View 1: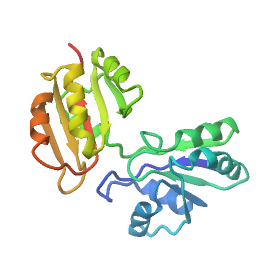
View 2: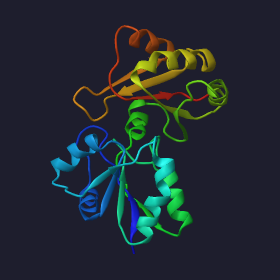
View 3: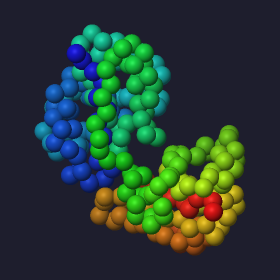
View 4: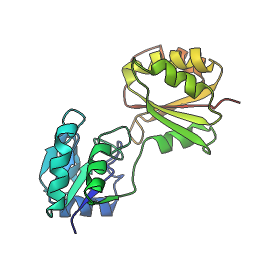
Length: 223
Protein backbone atom coordinates (compact mmCIF):
# COMPACT_ATOMS: atom_id res chain seq x y z
CA UNK A 1 0.00 0.00 0.00
CA UNK A 2 1.37 3.41 -0.99
CA UNK A 3 2.06 5.98 1.70
CA UNK A 4 3.42 9.41 2.56
CA UNK A 5 6.81 9.28 4.26
CA UNK A 6 8.22 12.28 6.11
CA UNK A 7 12.00 12.18 5.71
CA UNK A 8 14.15 14.39 7.97
CA UNK A 9 17.18 15.86 6.23
CA UNK A 10 20.45 17.22 7.71
CA UNK A 11 20.29 20.65 9.36
CA UNK A 12 23.78 21.41 8.09
CA UNK A 13 26.28 18.58 7.82
CA UNK A 14 25.19 16.32 4.97
CA UNK A 15 26.56 13.26 6.79
CA UNK A 16 23.73 13.53 9.31
CA UNK A 17 21.28 11.42 7.34
CA UNK A 18 20.31 7.82 7.98
CA UNK A 19 20.76 4.90 5.62
CA UNK A 20 17.02 4.31 5.85
CA UNK A 21 16.28 7.90 4.78
CA UNK A 22 18.49 7.51 1.71
CA UNK A 23 16.77 4.23 0.82
CA UNK A 24 13.29 5.76 1.14
CA UNK A 25 14.26 8.72 -1.03
CA UNK A 26 15.58 6.35 -3.70
CA UNK A 27 12.54 4.06 -3.61
CA UNK A 28 9.87 6.78 -3.62
CA UNK A 29 8.00 7.69 -6.80
CA UNK A 30 8.17 11.40 -6.02
CA UNK A 31 9.93 13.71 -3.56
CA UNK A 32 8.14 16.85 -2.40
CA UNK A 33 10.80 19.43 -1.49
CA UNK A 34 10.50 22.83 0.15
CA UNK A 35 13.24 24.10 -2.19
CA UNK A 36 14.29 21.74 -4.97
CA UNK A 37 17.61 23.54 -5.40
CA UNK A 38 18.56 22.92 -1.78
CA UNK A 39 17.39 19.30 -1.80
CA UNK A 40 19.16 18.57 -5.10
CA UNK A 41 22.53 19.08 -3.37
CA UNK A 42 21.67 16.33 -0.87
CA UNK A 43 20.25 13.99 -3.50
CA UNK A 44 23.29 14.37 -5.72
CA UNK A 45 25.58 13.60 -2.77
CA UNK A 46 23.87 10.22 -2.23
CA UNK A 47 23.03 9.29 -5.81
CA UNK A 48 19.27 9.76 -5.49
CA UNK A 49 17.63 10.25 -8.90
CA UNK A 50 13.97 10.30 -7.83
CA UNK A 51 12.08 13.16 -9.46
CA UNK A 52 11.19 16.18 -7.32
CA UNK A 53 8.57 18.87 -7.24
CA UNK A 54 8.16 21.94 -5.03
CA UNK A 55 5.97 21.87 -1.93
CA UNK A 56 6.27 25.00 0.19
CA UNK A 57 4.17 27.38 2.25
CA UNK A 58 3.12 29.37 -0.82
CA UNK A 59 1.55 26.46 -2.71
CA UNK A 60 0.75 23.79 -0.11
CA UNK A 61 -2.87 24.87 0.42
CA UNK A 62 -3.64 24.35 -3.27
CA UNK A 63 -1.61 21.16 -3.71
CA UNK A 64 -2.29 18.91 -0.72
CA UNK A 65 -5.49 17.29 -1.99
CA UNK A 66 -3.93 16.41 -5.34
CA UNK A 67 -0.86 14.84 -3.73
CA UNK A 68 -2.99 12.89 -1.25
CA UNK A 69 -5.06 11.53 -4.14
CA UNK A 70 -1.91 10.47 -5.98
CA UNK A 71 -0.80 8.44 -2.97
CA UNK A 72 -4.27 6.94 -2.71
CA UNK A 73 -3.90 5.78 -6.32
CA UNK A 74 -0.58 4.05 -5.61
CA UNK A 75 2.30 6.53 -5.67
CA UNK A 76 4.77 6.51 -2.77
CA UNK A 77 5.65 10.11 -1.93
CA UNK A 78 8.46 11.35 0.33
CA UNK A 79 8.24 14.81 1.90
CA UNK A 80 11.36 16.75 2.88
CA UNK A 81 12.04 20.30 4.07
CA UNK A 82 15.18 22.32 3.45
CA UNK A 83 16.60 21.08 6.75
CA UNK A 84 15.34 19.04 9.68
CA UNK A 85 11.99 17.31 10.07
CA UNK A 86 9.06 18.31 7.81
CA UNK A 87 6.11 19.74 9.71
CA UNK A 88 8.23 21.26 12.50
CA UNK A 89 8.14 24.98 11.64
CA UNK A 90 8.14 23.87 7.99
CA UNK A 91 5.43 22.73 5.52
CA UNK A 92 3.96 19.31 6.15
CA UNK A 93 1.00 19.48 8.50
CA UNK A 94 -1.62 20.22 5.84
CA UNK A 95 -0.52 17.29 3.68
CA UNK A 96 -0.41 14.95 6.69
CA UNK A 97 -3.94 15.96 7.65
CA UNK A 98 -5.24 15.52 4.10
CA UNK A 99 -3.70 12.05 3.84
CA UNK A 100 -5.07 10.89 7.18
CA UNK A 101 -8.52 12.18 6.24
CA UNK A 102 -8.44 9.95 3.14
CA UNK A 103 -7.13 6.97 5.05
CA UNK A 104 -3.65 7.21 3.50
CA UNK A 105 -0.82 5.82 5.63
CA UNK A 106 1.66 8.37 6.98
CA UNK A 107 5.07 7.37 8.29
CA UNK A 108 7.68 9.67 9.85
CA UNK A 109 11.33 8.67 9.97
CA UNK A 110 13.40 9.73 13.01
CA UNK A 111 16.15 12.18 12.29
CA UNK A 112 17.63 15.68 12.61
CA UNK A 113 15.87 18.58 14.28
CA UNK A 114 17.67 21.77 15.31
CA UNK A 115 16.00 22.34 18.65
CA UNK A 116 17.24 19.12 20.31
CA UNK A 117 21.00 19.87 20.06
CA UNK A 118 20.32 23.53 20.89
CA UNK A 119 18.38 22.54 24.01
CA UNK A 120 21.09 20.19 25.23
CA UNK A 121 23.89 22.65 24.41
CA UNK A 122 22.17 25.38 26.42
CA UNK A 123 22.83 23.76 29.79
CA UNK A 124 19.26 24.55 30.83
CA UNK A 125 16.89 21.82 32.08
CA UNK A 126 15.71 19.62 29.21
CA UNK A 127 12.66 18.31 31.08
CA UNK A 128 10.15 19.77 30.72
CA UNK A 129 10.52 22.12 27.78
CA UNK A 130 8.09 24.10 25.63
CA UNK A 131 8.65 24.41 21.89
CA UNK A 132 7.26 27.69 20.54
CA UNK A 133 8.85 27.69 17.10
CA UNK A 134 8.72 31.06 15.34
CA UNK A 135 7.00 33.91 17.17
CA UNK A 136 4.43 35.91 15.18
CA UNK A 137 6.02 39.00 13.65
CA UNK A 138 3.11 41.30 14.42
CA UNK A 139 -0.41 40.10 15.19
CA UNK A 140 -0.49 37.98 18.32
CA UNK A 141 3.19 38.47 19.15
CA UNK A 142 2.58 40.26 22.46
CA UNK A 143 0.01 37.66 23.49
CA UNK A 144 2.50 34.85 22.86
CA UNK A 145 5.26 36.62 24.80
CA UNK A 146 2.92 37.15 27.75
CA UNK A 147 2.01 33.47 27.68
CA UNK A 148 5.64 32.36 27.50
CA UNK A 149 6.64 34.64 30.37
CA UNK A 150 4.61 32.58 32.84
CA UNK A 151 5.72 29.08 31.81
CA UNK A 152 7.87 27.26 34.41
CA UNK A 153 9.76 25.22 31.81
CA UNK A 154 12.62 25.80 29.39
CA UNK A 155 11.47 27.68 26.28
CA UNK A 156 12.63 27.03 22.70
CA UNK A 157 12.18 29.66 20.00
CA UNK A 158 13.26 29.71 16.34
CA UNK A 159 14.38 32.97 14.77
CA UNK A 160 16.00 34.32 11.62
CA UNK A 161 19.41 36.00 11.99
CA UNK A 162 18.25 39.51 11.02
CA UNK A 163 15.51 39.44 13.69
CA UNK A 164 17.60 37.92 16.49
CA UNK A 165 18.42 41.10 18.43
CA UNK A 166 14.85 42.42 18.13
CA UNK A 167 13.48 39.15 19.52
CA UNK A 168 16.03 39.07 22.35
CA UNK A 169 14.99 42.62 23.27
CA UNK A 170 11.33 41.55 23.28
CA UNK A 171 12.21 38.61 25.54
CA UNK A 172 14.15 40.90 27.89
CA UNK A 173 11.18 43.26 28.14
CA UNK A 174 8.55 40.57 28.67
CA UNK A 175 10.41 37.77 30.47
CA UNK A 176 13.13 39.73 32.26
CA UNK A 177 16.63 40.59 31.05
CA UNK A 178 18.30 38.52 33.79
CA UNK A 179 16.86 35.18 32.72
CA UNK A 180 19.50 32.74 31.55
CA UNK A 181 19.40 31.83 27.87
CA UNK A 182 21.44 30.57 24.95
CA UNK A 183 21.60 31.26 21.24
CA UNK A 184 22.70 28.47 18.90
CA UNK A 185 23.45 29.00 15.23
CA UNK A 186 25.01 27.09 12.34
CA UNK A 187 24.33 23.81 14.17
CA UNK A 188 26.36 20.87 12.82
CA UNK A 189 28.29 23.19 10.47
CA UNK A 190 31.91 24.34 10.50
CA UNK A 191 31.19 27.59 12.34
CA UNK A 192 28.67 26.20 14.84
CA UNK A 193 28.29 28.47 17.87
CA UNK A 194 26.32 28.39 21.09
CA UNK A 195 26.47 31.55 23.20
CA UNK A 196 25.19 31.39 26.78
CA UNK A 197 24.40 34.08 29.35
CA UNK A 198 21.59 36.31 30.52
CA UNK A 199 19.29 37.70 27.86
CA UNK A 200 20.90 41.12 28.39
CA UNK A 201 24.39 39.67 27.89
CA UNK A 202 23.28 37.97 24.67
CA UNK A 203 21.85 41.24 23.36
CA UNK A 204 25.18 42.98 23.99
CA UNK A 205 27.07 40.20 22.22
CA UNK A 206 24.91 39.98 19.11
CA UNK A 207 24.63 43.77 18.72
CA UNK A 208 28.31 43.92 17.78
CA UNK A 209 27.94 42.69 14.20
CA UNK A 210 25.86 40.79 11.62
CA UNK A 211 24.64 37.31 12.51
CA UNK A 212 24.56 34.40 10.06
CA UNK A 213 22.78 31.05 10.13
CA UNK A 214 19.45 29.81 11.38
CA UNK A 215 18.90 30.59 15.05
CA UNK A 216 17.57 28.62 18.02
CA UNK A 217 16.98 30.58 21.23
CA UNK A 218 16.65 28.62 24.47
CA UNK A 219 15.39 30.50 27.54
CA UNK A 220 15.15 29.62 31.22
CA UNK A 221 11.60 29.09 32.45
CA UNK A 222 9.92 31.15 35.15
CA UNK A 223 11.11 30.26 38.66
